[in-house]
Length: 222
Image (cartoon, rainbow, N blue to C red; front, side, top):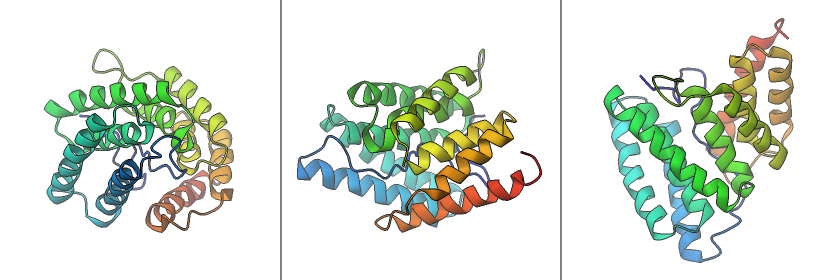
């Protein structure tokens, strides 16, 4: 029911969310940084190197258990909370109808807490990831989806992260889904103009490929 973070041509979310490339504003403790970096790299490996299916789902669920433990251990670290939220969102996108909504609600709660800690951290990772949830999850009475709230969150994310690749990608994706093609094209072009992230080539390359696919689809529409 809620495979809102997975499409053939559109890279998912969350999150990924982030997903989000800027250094953590919190997490000066080397142990926290190492733990968060592990989550980031494992998410990329699972997301982009394991084909969709039961193996990928199992790997993401296992990573989710790690993310939950790290988030619980470092409740005041914004990076740990953002990545726990991103991975929980990803799990929701892979889950069956019975489990998906519960995971999506849980991701929302984690990301709302992260947003209160620091809405600018990890290239506005919290509001960007929340925005994705609100526009990809079904609305009332099925779930909590809300296009107006999604727009507000994504506009805040891009305002807080002018050089945030994912913030601009997801904003462009949202605008495309709303039929706002000229604005969507402008957002995607802004995203491609952002400097590449040499420390995260797997994520950076895959995200830009999807953005270019969107721009190709937008030819003649905007």
